[in-house]
Length: 410
Image 1 (cartoon, rainbow, N blue to C red):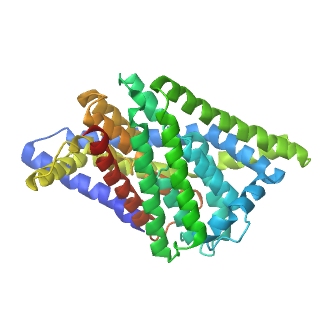
Image 2 (tube, rainbow, N blue to C red):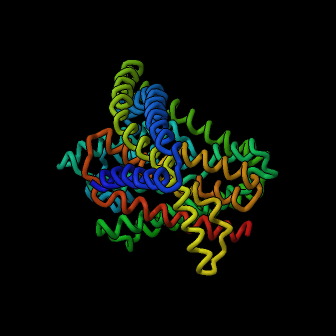
Image 3 (cartoon, one colour):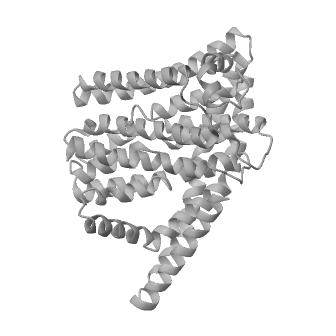
């Protein structure tokens, strides 16, 4: 329901602003630009879905092998202690916990193409447990927030973009991103737990979060001992090696359990193709709404208003130039990526704004895109507190990113 109101708001606000521009400023280009954006956004939505078809088929096929080979059940048992606390409505040892883990692990490694199909698989399994098929359940919302908070250990794509834009040290934003995304995820867990009345003050969760904090610290220290070239090589190689290892382990597990691996893969791949087709309408809806909002100039007006407000309060406005990336990220990953590249082009890859835009890009994920795709894939229309929790996690990530950028580069 919230997503419905936001989608309507995109169009109404965009139309009103465009009308004002036409009547009072004589801007005859704004309405053609808005209409062009509807066509281009629709095309982009279809191309994204088409591009996902192969990846979805591949990874849902691999996941099906893992299911039949018992890997998912093993992961579920290992994660039961912490998942029982964060997802109290999921039966202990249910296979969905393994799927959730695989999705989160792929996100942490920056493997977006692998994370999406794994997440869609987890959402389908959560829907099987859902008693109200059109309404998001508590486990669904917690899972969505863990995705939208964007916990990433190896932001490979951002490092590549910085290298392409001529940054002297493309990896200098690695530690700031790691810190910002950690705070975003932590805030998402806390906020969602408050909504769902989950007690976080228990031994299991405190030990897990403490262990995660130590792991993050160890990773920061380890990469801090490397030069930029070695850091890029290690991070890229680690991600690819782990990804290939997952595929091989799943296949070997299937063989050991005497599973017909090929048939299992085909079975899962068929589900991937069906899922890719099913999400097209939801992608078209959300991307067209965002495209119209951008084309009307509403985003530019929002940024200018924020800059004026910060300046009026006597605050430092150095960060405002990077805000388009932060504001676009919950709406569109490709849009935010474009904003990030534009910021580095305009201000310089090694400028404060250029670096901060990269930290924004890596500190959170595309909240509305994930909501549209994941909920749309299983027919959820009533999102309850998912949007509020996701956006609050995003806000925490943005605030943390600004503070950390000033600490490192200000």
